[in-house]
Amino acid sequence: MMGAAVAVTMAAAATAAALLSLLWLDRYGAETLPPFVGAVAGAAGVTMAVGLLLAQLNPNPGEAPGGATADALHAGAGSAAVVLSAVLAVLALCPPTRFPGLIEPLVMGAAAGLGNGLATALGEAVQRPVAAVSRVLWLALAGAGCGVLVGWARGGGGRASRVAAALAAPVVGAGAAMAGWWASAHGEGELSAAMVGVALALLGLTVLAAVAAERRVIRSALAREVALGVLPEWVVPVVASLRQRAFGAWWMPRRERRVVALVLVRLAFRAWACLGVAGEAGRLRGLEVGRLRQRARELLRLRNGAAERPEEW
Image (cartoon, rainbow, N blue to C red; front, side, top):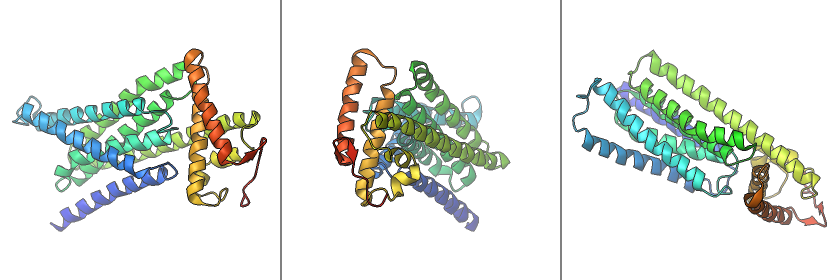
């Protein structure tokens, strides 16, 4: 009994750590908590609904060919496919300024994956805590991968890279989700423990790659805005740093600092998305970029093209 309690506590602690890490990663975003909680709760609700539907379709689990393991894999694949499809649809249909960049789509996708994993792993957390944690982490990885690729597909970098990212998103998400379900279906052996480590490593690499790519896009896009005389030079190195975007001393009030950073990030990614887009679509995106430029100039208190540099910088 004591061992089961310790295992459940460790599983809960690991899940809580993952949730807090995602919130910290997106700490500079606007209204981070409500959409994050909504993604977790919505994915969990969809997963439970799919589980009830599958239970009605197959009231005798374990009697199908392959036994209980195959049945669990089929059920997991069904719920994960529905949740990941919903993640892709929501991120693709949301206005690009709602979840700009690569980090915010990553966080929302990972939150949905966590909700999917939590809803399916609660029943076995006591008996198989390592397998449950493995499943949750792999489903979070699946959602994070989908989010990053959808964020890239909505941005610039050429039509070929956008199409490739859009096509790769469901493949990456489905592959990671099935890896988690396959590992958790094989019990509490060394395989499940190893898969936890692999999931953590891949999740960390995904976050680092997204941060590096987002920083590079922000730096290059804002450098072009500086060359056009829209922004002062000191903005580029500060906003391009993830840590300084949240805690840098380049703007006095923290709340105001976050608003300015969010507007500049949106400007950078909308300007990036305009690259290589011609015709009516390019004109409409250009109008949106112009509106964001005006907003950024107002926030930075530009006077005739010259910025009043913050006193703390």
